[in-house]
Length: 343
Image 1: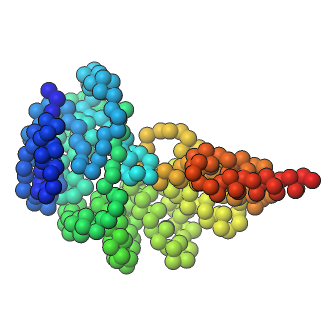
Image 2 (image 1 turned 180 degrees about the vertical axis):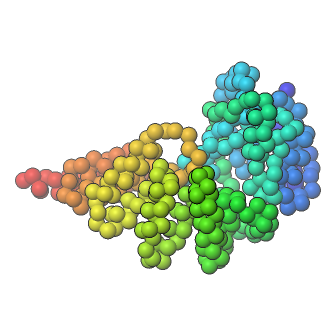
Image 3 (image 1 turned 120 degrees about the horizontal axis):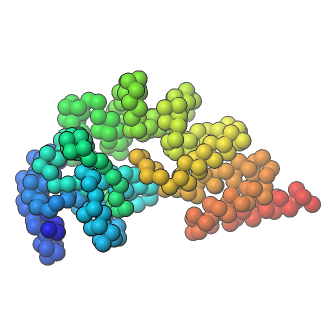
């Protein structure tokens, strides 16, 4: 049975009428400052064999219906992860978005609600697995003015953190909200507390990828104030050696310090990781994985007097960003220097 279940928690526009025109089963639920309650209310009304959940500010990108139907009908998996791009300029990461319609799989948590523990319990119960589906969801809700959303989320994040103080995702979101609301001292204190949590997780042998987000933002804050963050960056790189954001930060610091060969080495590592095209657990700014490393690599090579190689890097950057008029200019300048050096 194919169906669309829409749970409306108090929309003021014509969302309900639009959903009904497209054949959705629409239900109303009183919003009670609890995302899990709302999601579970929708799940209770779903009648299909499989669940795909998607928010109002998300778009499912060009699904191949025939391929997905075949995948679901033939699989013994309890759930599937698919790629989610959290912003228009972001890379994608893996999210648990498809699972069997099992009453034991429900959400927990006031905000940043999760069903992962439930999926894990059912998988162990049934001796089943979690697989990856060839689907992409684009999130568009972080564009534009976020003030109302931040004001709504702030008390929910604080409540959830009281309930689950080890939740690094909630801590990081709380930082982002406070940072966006221009409350820098509170924002940094959240990161410092989160760093204590992630270090404790690491010491227990459970390195949490979310810790890389904590490190990266705390390092960024300290660098913006002109403070030394070398030791913190070295610690972060040791714990998260394949994190592209940390490699990017290190390459920029090496560039600014005049250590061009070392900067090139870090950029090569970044490009190698980005070039694997493997499913990721962290989203990055897309530019960081494409044009930007080639641009900075070109600058390092230019300052080393390796002008022809620098020109090739600017040409590569231009392939990723053909509308950026600076790359052809930099390429021609590098080639002119190369001709002068060889004359």
